[in-house]
Length: 411
Image (cartoon, rainbow, N blue to C red; front, side, top):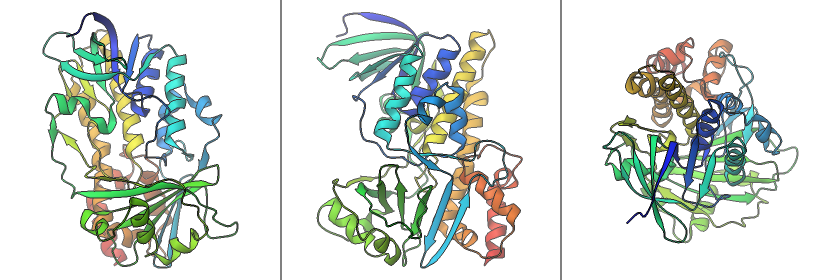
């Protein structure tokens, strides 16, 4: 049983991007922030291709210089390839105002950069701290935390933010999980020394998404880093991934070999890191908030990795939650459904429309169509750059209808 009860102001579960940026934003408000993290940083994670919209939140949290000076791979867009067809989006040429470039990052180092910046800003960041129980029935949330030596203590806070990512601490402990409306898909992925030759049709300043030559709902990601390495993965239904036997590395290599363009690009790659697999990553919850708590980023909902929206949604949730907490501290009454959940979900639902259109094949028809409108291209570029909350963009205001009409035209 817990032996002591510690008092805290804002308690954040998880020191990943959502937790670190939330901590930075709250420290700028002068709040006392405690962050508890189960792992010891640095640690491996995927979700390595950031979107330009995310830079706004990094800057607001006071972490921009830390990220810029870390030497990550500059990113200015996204490229798509399918059966010899190729198209790309330059995020600097977009409809929405704001950042047009960002970085592609190895998350082990990127997450530590953000967490270290939060600590320098005054947040109390504690590693190897595992949440074992939560009680949110009282006026102040109470969290039981076990440290690396097995000792358990209780922390009571004025507000609790769950930024535990795929750990989904509060959804699991409070039984908030609900089924995702997306089909179950999986991913096999690794890091390789890519040895992509100079002069090849490969822009290291862009993520490349490659559509499988025979299965349009199967796709690969290639995310180049600044050190000659890249993140490589494939996403598909589990029955497709299960066709190949052997280790995860052998299965991934076999699936990569099925695309002539990608296999040629990576012909000289050194496969020096064992591949991993995750299945059923899409997640949802019955509510993004409750009695003195809120869920940030992947702890609330995760859609799909195809448009790299995860970290941007995480940052947006941290920004909205910190704004709500600032208003509460100023004496205002905050409706967490109206002021947090609804605006966050608006952008998530925009991304959802594009993810659904991708797997239906209609978005692929749009992006590979030749001779389209430059203005429409800029509007779509904005969404791919993360500006899914800019309702001035017609493809944000009415994403499903606009995509359906455009796909029909492109057909």
